[in-house]
Image (cartoon, rainbow, N blue to C red; front, side, top):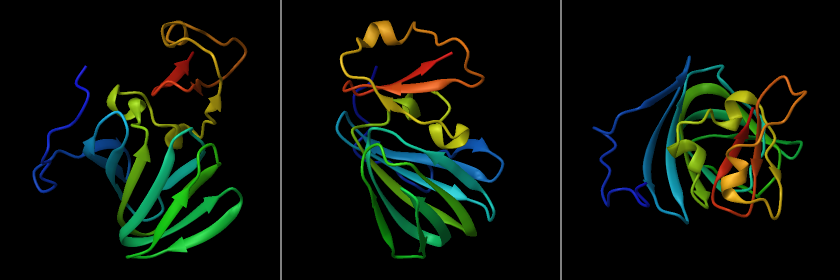
Length: 161
């Protein structure tokens, strides 16, 4: 697997990845330590409450959004930024169509491997120290209606079915 993006990723020609009605993204640059993602929202689209072990910062490029982070609501407009500490529950509602630039550390492996992002499913990623990378990929959790994402100190998000 490639361990970093190209040096230059032209946003005007880079393909948008369709994530469902009214939501798409462009991955603009990444390596093992960091990832930058441009996310385009139509009015009314919701990024469900979720958490992950990544540190996240978000910059509102255009539009208007209501973010809820750890139970506290923030309305952001163009030029505003947010910091989201690891493992905090957070989500957003798009109040006016726009674009948010998200930066994650470490890299969001789930964005690269084609997994459904946790914000579409409203999943909670739970840190599980000591789990081995290769075991996690084959584990199953019984009695759960929806997949569960389990994260570990390894730079990857695991999806259990």
